Length: 406
Image 1 (tube, rainbow, N blue to C red):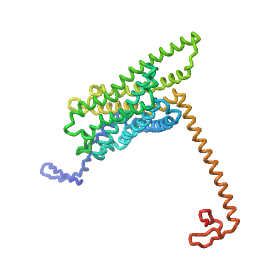
Image 2: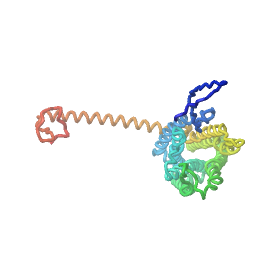
Image 3: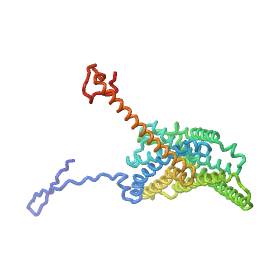
Image 4: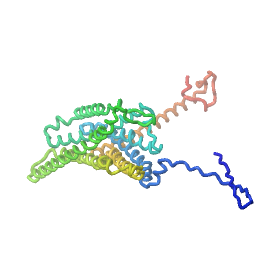
């Protein structure tokens, strides 16, 4: 940008002094961006660093844990109970949640807020549908598993008929259909606007602004939270009564032939309680955040944008998201701590893998030894058996191989 020099004329009495003053051009200062403004607040810097460095750690350990959980639960010894059917489905859904939501949010942070769901209208619809669907199904599988455990403890005579693997598969399929139906409205209620934002269509703006947030909160957080808390208390109460009853029978010198079976159910109950309570603990920050966000964070104060309020909102959102993703990453560790059979099958799986590698190495060495002895025997008969691609005899031993044998 070219700037003109300014000529200032000064006069003193009858004498005219023409003085030329050359000034430097004024420095152009660009308008600060939103990120530059937010970087002034420690809350925003903390939120950015937290998302960049902590989210991939949760994704990494969650990926390994869910894959190992699924492989162990697919073993023959683990497929005999309906609980394992639910746990298999939970491992798959937890892995989907981590990559459709946590991994996508991590990429958005790295790309300075550019979400891959805004690439096209198709991406917007599919990604948001999968996001809501995987969240809902993963949570309600835990609810179904907890309710079934309550039935097995409170109605032990009916448990053999109701808590079966086939029934667990039917319940899983039913939940799958229900949440596909509930979230299918996203296929016609969202779109991409001119600014490349994924927004609700004009006819459904009121639904997404006033109904959808509370519907989502009820399905994923509030209702499962209340159901799990209630049934966990009932399970603990019934389990305590059963334990006291068994102790009373033992004190009266009654033999209990089902002690081993009852101990198995106790350990299984303890493992499921740990999964349920981890959900309650890890989702509590998100429930609290969703309940108070409209009142605790003010984005407009006295007609001006409150950037610090937005930075505080972003920090609270990232922390609550972290606990949410943590809930979908730690089930493997809970199974390993509380599940004796799970630990045993995990050890067997690794032992079988090592044994398989050892056998493969032994077979490979045996085949190599057989091949070497055959080549030695064949080459001793003369090099006339080995031909090149032109049918010309090649007397070079380095060229000869069993693949060219005719």
